Length: 409
Picture 1 (cartoon, rainbow, N blue to C red):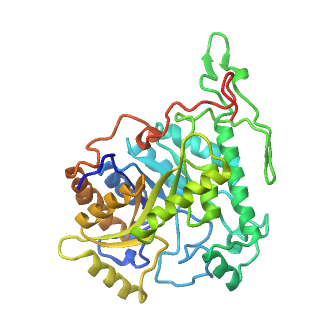
Picture 2: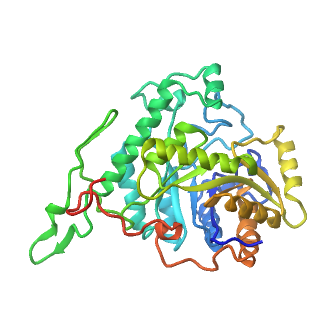
Picture 3: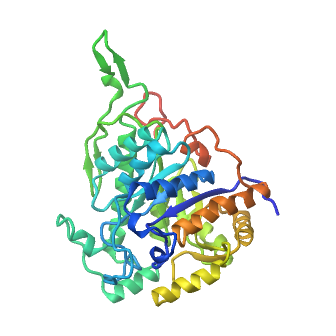
């Protein structure tokens, strides 16, 4: 089986892996989960597999089984995280080609700080930075800051959210997130390309005519600008978002270049792509259409144990059947390759694999899945000499909205 277009592949990294018992596996190195060497090992393995990028999960409270669920006080799970952006910053100088996409929550982080941080990452990675936008509707997380009050979700609220009916305050948080992302993008453009003159003889470091205030006044936020960081090497680093339902699809359509979606089976793929396209129409998106990556949790066959047997064993260790918002695959790399190609032929642009056990499944992805896809002629054999936008097929010469002669957005 072959495909007419190249397949895009990325991975989502979260501690020891996406299964709550992953840290108890023999190769998981739980004593090193918060070390630079552990994260370097994971990402260099992903880079060896020529993957597009890695995303790094983050939150403002301890991880829970469901983002809108009650506080989970279990002690047999990894109850801590490093800062995703700082992890990415550490990985930038020790990698060469793979994209680095940390998660940064908009709800409690000022867009000025996000803009500066991601722009800096784009410089230190030489054009490989991205950002996964995240919304926090958690009262627990708002309590970490004490600057705004987010109500506690009732059981009825949680059931409504799962059903796709959001409380008004949650919709407001998504609207605020889209506004924040717009500000971040404007701040990236607040310095034109070539604004840095660096003329020692004339004592001019910048051309003030090419540095712009953005003077943003929105419903939720007000930012004057300009940024204090020059325009990033990519012009606009890649913005991504995870989406499960209409309001999140609309956030992605308003703010992102790429959306992560979660079909639970082949029959849902076309339906979700239709919902994403409808969201783009509702918000009046212009220019490039959203790239759509499907999330899949993977437990891959390895020497001596099948992926399904490993998943069953991990479930027994945790005392509960593993559930996910995304499709769960357990099996061979050949069967996974079949699935990826079938979903791609239904319109999926790429895939973000979530390793059930980070060390083991990432080894299988880079060491066996990628060669399987290469043998089928659907995956590259080397990195193109381009920045992350180029690797993803996004325009690499992004116009600056504030430059003279740029058409109005």
